Length: 114
Image (cartoon, rainbow, N blue to C red):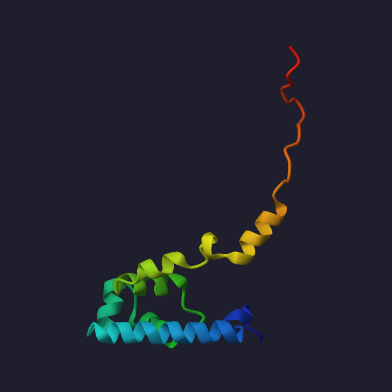
């Protein structure tokens, strides 16, 4: 039997590396605050396994767990800038390319005929 979601079993390399780095960063932040895994789990209202899986960077861990851990560590504000439209250079370029160059009269538009 094959996995239903290949992203969970074999994510792209860059995704896997980013999750691993995020998990390690969360672990470091937790240890610096002298918090145990059970304390973190209780603080975010989940089980010990969810915290452990997040710190290992497991792709199957829900984003809510990652965000709750950031919240519990006082780091949630850093997540707010993820995929922010103002920092998406490619998206801004594509949006500018689609903008109309001139206004067009639509059906039922007002005219200046008095």
